Length: 168
Image (tube, rainbow, N blue to C red; front, side, top):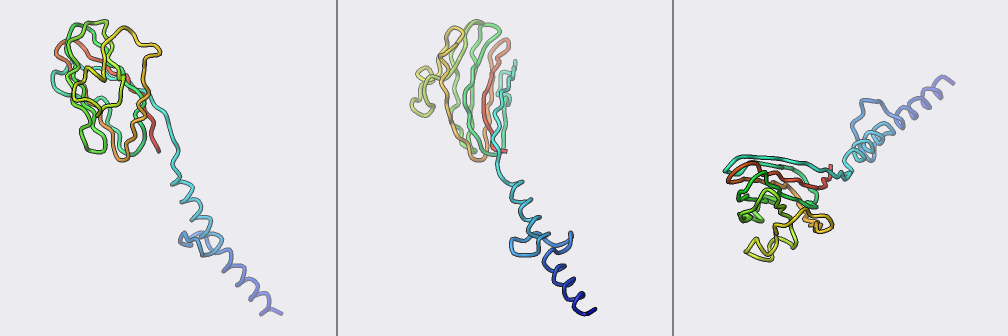
C-alpha cells in the first residue's frame, strides 16, 4: 500500500512540477504557467502619447527620440518670434525630411498637409498658417525600429507639439 501512494505522489509531482522548473510549453504545469506568463508579457500594447518641445538652438536639437515601433500621427511647429525653423524627421535610421520651413512670424503654425516624400519642396507639404483647427492631417507614418524628430530655429523659440503612438 505504501508503494502505491509513493507512485501517486511521484506521478502528481511530475505533472505539477516545481516552482523552479524552467519555462516550457511541453513541461509540467509549473513550467507551462511560466511559459504562458512570459508569452503574455511579450504581447504588445499600444499607447498614445503627446509631447511638446521648445528650443532656441540654431543647430538641430532632439525633440523626440523613440526606439521601438509605432506611428507618428501629427506635429505642429510654432514660433515665439519672427524666425526660420528647421525640421528633421528620421524614421528607422533613414532621414525622411530635412526641411527649412521658411520664414515665419510669431503667429505662424507649421503643420503637414501631405505625406512627406511626395515633394522635394517643403512648402508643398508643410504650410504656415493661422492656428490650425481641423486642418491637421493625420500622418499615420509608421516606424518599425525608431523615430527621431529634431528642431532648430534662427531666432527666438521654436516649439513642436507631437502626437504619436508606440507599441510597448
